Image (tube, rainbow, N blue to C red; front, side):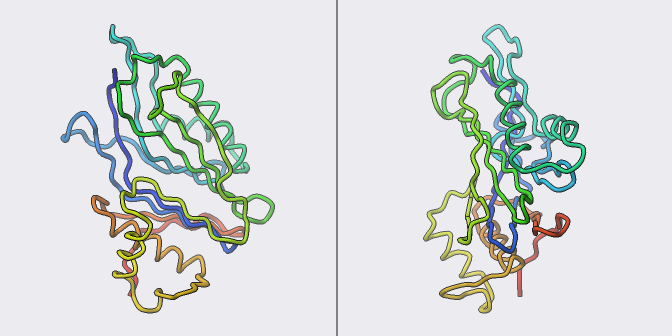
Length: 240
């Protein structure tokens, strides 16, 4: 059975050779009570240069039929542990592997009868510089599959290749509908057939994608990562 479940909202990542933008809305909805207040953040900076952003569950407690707690996960606690492991500079690959190991340990005793039926995945995205480029790693807990304990895996999603990488979580529209909606809300300067966007323009585009998703909750936050700069944290505003 489950208890204390906060579900994060929309998360969008666009990575290019110029840098990476991560967009997240402020939604964190309780699956137990509409009156519950979100107690968890969904983003943290680890070791001064790696951004970790969570979606799916940001708090997850699994209990046995007797009520005993067998797994207790919170994004806040995991981020604090990662910051202890990596107090200074760290690679996104190392942070992703540490997050995977922590999640596997937390959920290692979850059995087939402890998590109910249909569940979303826990997803952590780790973004940071590596060898003068930005890499994106994704850590996924597959609660939505019958395997118990849940499978936890870490994968490199974007290795700094030339083509932009697009990742979206909590977005319910098709890719075609998503593009039609953001272009319908964008100023003419951002609507191009073959867009050689700068990272700052990608940040505008990602914000438009998130803001046009039904159910997205303001403020929409964004983190811009460039290979040679500190992480830039902003609140997205609609471009003119």
